[in-house]
Amino acid sequence: MHAKGNPCSCCSFDDYKCTAEWLLNKTRHRPKIAVICGSGLGLLADSVSNKQTFRYEDIPNFPVSTVPGHEGCLVFGDLKEKSCVFMQSRFHLYEGYSLCKVTFPVRIFKLLGVETIIVTNASGGLCKDIKAGDIMIIKDHINLPGFAGQHPLCGPNDERFGIRFPCMSDAYNKDLRKLALDISQQLGYSDFVREGVYCMVSGPNFETIAEARMLHILGSDSVGMSTIPEVTVAKHCDLRVLGLSLITNKVSLDYSREEKVNHEEVLEMCKMRAEMFQNLVNTIIAKCDQVDGINSN
Ligand SMILES: O=P(O)(O)O[C@H]1O[C@H](CO)[C@@H](O)[C@H]1O
Ligand SMILES: Nc1nc2[nH]cnc2c(=O)[nH]1
Image 1: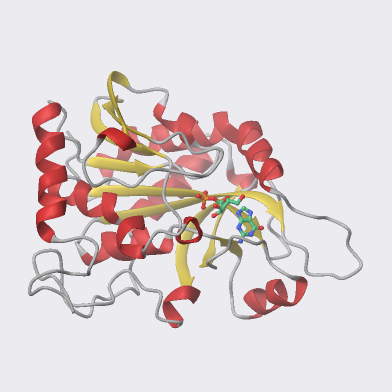
Image 2: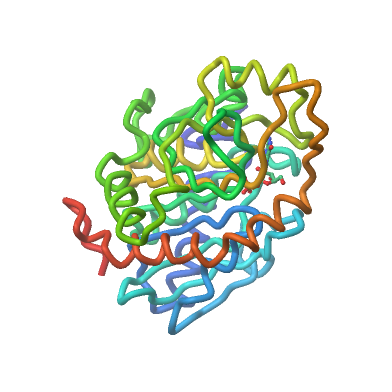
């Protein structure tokens, strides 16, 4: 049984409030932009000034990260004169966390006053014209675990965060996507930046060839094990969302191919593309107040 007013059995509104108040009491930063760093992408937080770092284990109610390539820190600071907060690692369903815990930080960001969230990840490329090393601006997603009832908004709806039946057809902000595409062009990245559809599977195993073929036929350009729960909860509570995926590997769709993906390869590709990915994210943050309605200071 859920207690009245509780959105699920593991996170109550009081839990969110307690964590947000704890952070607001410990930091002077009042970020308007949050960035969730995907596997191997924690360095996105490296360029901030006036840095203040909290380890997840020290933050009340915060889960801890168990995946290699995920540092487990919440980093506040200024980037290009914008006050930001970075999650240097995220939580995944396959780690054993409920989707309520996986998305816990997103509602904390909302209570901290964040308005825009940039969600990043590493993913495998499914479509023919996408290569390892490409950056995919997420234009839409397929919530495969959600189809099976693994959905962060299942359970009583908490109106303090959002409505019962949120619209997801515009989950990824069109103006931010355009800004990201324009900036990619200005930076000379057009050859390896494109838009596409991201699909989430629960993991932790990588796909079989038959599964990969199915995901491709369904319309997915890339596949990963994260992001969609965070984006869904962010959209529910009316955050502006930009999703960026680093394609770390090609997913095999062909029984004659010998490639066998592993997490080390994923992290290796993140290292190789780190500087460009960081440059893109930093420039988007620098210029995001060009987007209508964004006042990121
Ligand atoms: O989605 P992020 O956290 O970037 O990580 C991706 O990389 C890991 C697999 O190598 C999986 O966790 C997958 O989801
Ligand atoms: N499911 C899945 N997640 C990934 N994360 C990085 N690469 C992949 C992949 O090929 N498949």
